[in-house]
Length: 90
Image (tube, rainbow, N blue to C red):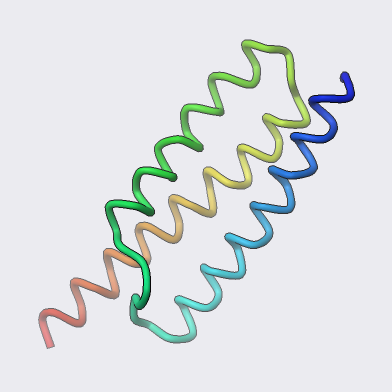
C-alpha cells in the first residue's frame, strides 16, 4: 500500500460511513427530501466503477472503502426508490 492509497482509502471509508448515516436517516424518515434519484444513482454507478478501477491500480485500501460506498449507495438508492414508489401509491 502506498501513501496515496492510504489517504484515498481513508477518505473512501469515511465517506461510506457518512452514506450509511443517510441510509439510517432514510429508514427513519421513510421519505426522500432534498436529493434527486438521478444524482444519487449517478454517484452509485461511479462507486461501482471504482470496484474495478482501484484493483487495476493495486489500491486495496481504496477498494475496501469503495466497496463500503458501493454497498451503501446501492442500499440508499433501492430504499429511496421503494419509499418514493410507496408514497406515490398512497
